[in-house]
View 1 (cartoon, rainbow, N blue to C red):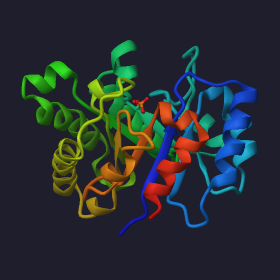
View 2: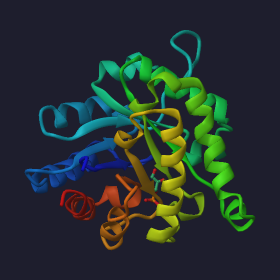
View 3: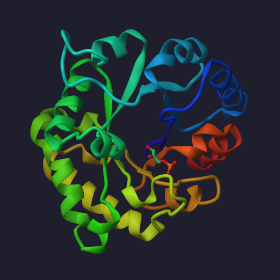
View 4: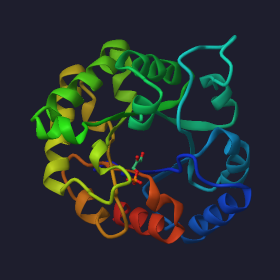
Amino acid sequence: MKKKLIAGNWKMNGNLAANQALLEGVLSGLPESACHVAVCVPSAYLAQVQGMLAGKGIDLGSQDVSAHEQGAYTGEVSAAMLKDFGVRYAIVGHSERRQYHGETDALVATKAQRALSAGITPIVCVGETLAQREAGQTEDVVKRQLAAVIHTNGHCISEIVVAYEPVWAIGTGKTASPEQAQAVHAVLRAQLKAASDHAERIHILYGGSMNAANAAELLAQTDIDGGLIGGAALKSADFLTIIGAASR
Ligand code: 13P
């Protein structure tokens, strides 16, 4: 069985002192044979976190990447710049970026492509809203979102990570049940298998109110290969409990 991946998404939280305390807490409790662990931090803190994590067994991630290579794109951060700071993962297509920044499936696919060509693993987020779930559209929505990324990146699709994040479960304390999550993960796995002979090795993460209490049950599902953790990644004890559950 492949090692699971637990990635923290700090979102727009933290400051120099809080980041240091959080990471010191996580590093001091990291089990010896831990699963893969990453933290996706605000761009402003990449240098700080890179310095703290060097050689420590936790990978560095960003929360976005520009769809452009370089040039007159004020405020954007390119994949090459992220690579300069040792970034291993870049979240692309998080629902908060789709919702608040109008990111389309095509843009997300281009972002994934930029990351891949810089040697960064994109963590491609997909997920349905509550209205879409209630209308029975969950499968169609996640398949459409993933299809765009497969279409643009088909030749190296086994290099991506996918995160299923139902929008209604993000930051709400409502988690998909292990059965609900597994059902969607199985759909995504089948779609990846149709696109690649190496789909088994792709990590499909669950995200959406995963916490210290529910992680073990979610992570026990066949096609749940890890988690993308928001709120619970900001508390070292909770993040470590989730890492522990994924390291068994
Ligand atoms: P929460 O764990 O806070 O629900 O956030 C999930 C998420 O959006 C991770 O990317």
